[in-house]
Image (cartoon, rainbow, N blue to C red; front, side, top):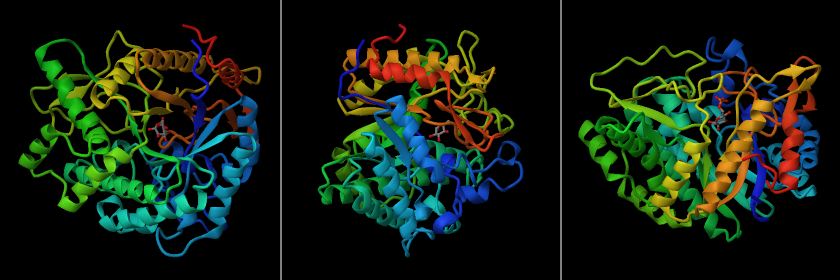
Length: 471
Ligand code: BG6
């Protein structure tokens, strides 16, 4: 059961969800600083102004991670700390912060795994059309190159983007993330293409610098399965995987978009505006990906629909991840199934589907190196006599690590696992109600940090390289 010595046990976070210090030391405002202030957008109006104040307490947090034996910390850089206006003048204090955080990790031998974009876009770029505007791509490439030059001597693992499908779909189909637009499929597909183009250009620039590190991107990975073996639902699963899996993975790893989707989008007038030069760069960059990051929380169970159905009401509880909505083209819908297990937020718990999904990756994309860059349980952790007894999280991570090991034994090339999250943080729409961390943050007591039961458990898992996981 032991994981190899070069398999990284890590945990992750994202700038907006942990840092706070939203206007400290010259940081510019972001799309999320603005969006969370709009009434009704987040649970009880929670926002990341202070978050868990990681910006000011990173030393304490990294020390705790070291105590847990964490081998790698995945965190994201806030673009607006580096370029307060998205482009132009650089804010040295922002660079200093990330240098300090990186050095603090290295002090303990923790590998810094850096995401360049985890959804917080400088507000000035948001106002100019965000990812719909190709100038944002140019600005992103400048920002990425600056990060490579400033941090690349010590950071050897870069992730260009986190979960394009989520910020594009929630931003332009569900209207639940900035810019809050609903049902605009044309814009949704345009954003995905512009991001893949930005990714390709960043990869090409990175390789020119000869920093001998690794670069890739992280996708959410929610493989679709029909609710039964009927022809209709088998078709629904194929269709869902074409749009939700291949649309995202093919351009990155194969260098071109899936024909099935392209043809339908062209027929419907929904294909992105793309130039031959952009498509050629995407193709050129594909072999430069050193790895693919997978964020796995749950699979999708899908059912074919014959007649158009209405989207369900967009509430905070169901707008991120819970099944129940038709696809944008009304071909299928995601459903809850009676024989499956779910979290309190109706996310399915299925380590079995994780193994099947990882096999799908191998079948489609061969031996590309994979890191599980997120996986974890969002829960309201029970506190018993002052102790945070997050046993469901221990069970969840145990079962998913066993699944990862099984996939490795079946020949899937996985080199690390990052639990989401290292420390409790702001859930984008659900505030602090939904917790994910190994480290608890007491919002009623000056943001004091406490070790959860899972902290001690994960420490043991790392120390024994998974030998004692419960199968
Ligand atoms: C992933 C994101 O999609 O899911 C994280 O990369 C996020 O940033 C996580 O926190 C869990 O989502 P939520 O909505 O429960 O916070």
